[in-house]
Length: 402
Ligand code: HEM
Image (cartoon, rainbow, N blue to C red; front, side, top):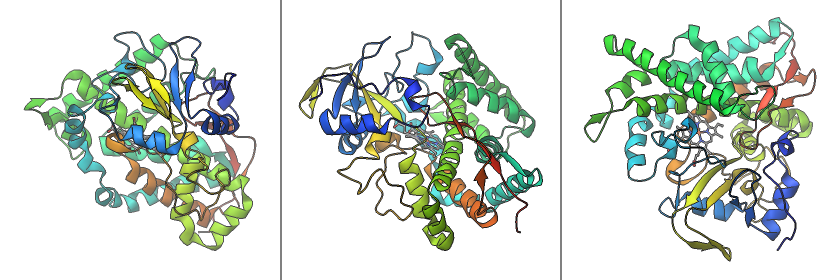
């Protein structure tokens, strides 16, 4: 039992990476911990692997429909849009997920490999011609952005606009991004309106892309409403880009900061699949998602009341001593590796095969062509307790060998 507040909410705590020492205390002494909220009603911080997994698999007891962020938003706020799949509960959730899941199966995603490799190679070439780049935006960010925009069917010339909207969405708590709640809502409205303009074009001339697919989709005999359609677009665009950018940036940082592990991987490239899972475990791109208790219940001796907010800290579950040997160690050969970075249960990440493919191809090329890649200045992190963002990461790179 702990008697003092262990704060894991303050976004400043995350500027140097997640506060792992605090999560360790919570896992050990108060795994289901009532966390006060300066401007809110408080929440249960769930920090052990078994509890995060159990709650994720039980949407009947812990729902997504009352919000997936810690903060409660006023009615009508676009961040709590019940028409976005991530905020839906059974049975509606499964019907919506079925509309897009066929586009993200490992077999469909595998077909993108050659194309993804062409993108990575071009981005590395461009960076090397300049002798260096901002790894986070020029390589790690551009790859997933280009791929998801192509999948959705967004024209290339609108790429900068999409990037700007995504940055505002994820960077709301960061002083450099500096977005007010009103501005953030305006961004989400603009994204909706943009998706509909594009949809109108597809109505006239359908293409082989996800927007055309969503245009034709029906749930219970009805085509998607304005907010359902816009919600899909916003979710796929934002979730499909920034998270993978942060996996690749944080993964590269971990390799640079652990030269023995980078050497091991260079000597034995067959370790790459386990290395990527370790990057996901060690620096999860998403620190948490929230659920709400549907009814009064008990967990690890704590009484949770109906309506209470329950926050699943993947970042802590991934370092649970009960599951991982030497959890604070970055080990590119770690196996098994049951990390929870993609969540679990009905909402498990839809894009995990895509994220894994992009990361594998990116690191295959990076390790082969830029084995000595080094920082040219400190990496700067996003001020956020939700996503593990890398804002900038200057690197030096020589002209690639071939
Ligand atoms: C390394 C990269 C990624 C990470 C760490 C990640 C993480 C997650 C997590 C933790 C969830 C669970 C949400 C919950 O339980 O409430 C999730 C859901 C989701 N992810 Fe990802 N994601 C990544 C990449 C992607 C990509 C590339 C896409 C492509 C479109 C994507 C699309 C989605 C969608 C649509 C959902 C909602 C699924 C649902 O509600 O059924 N993600 N992601």
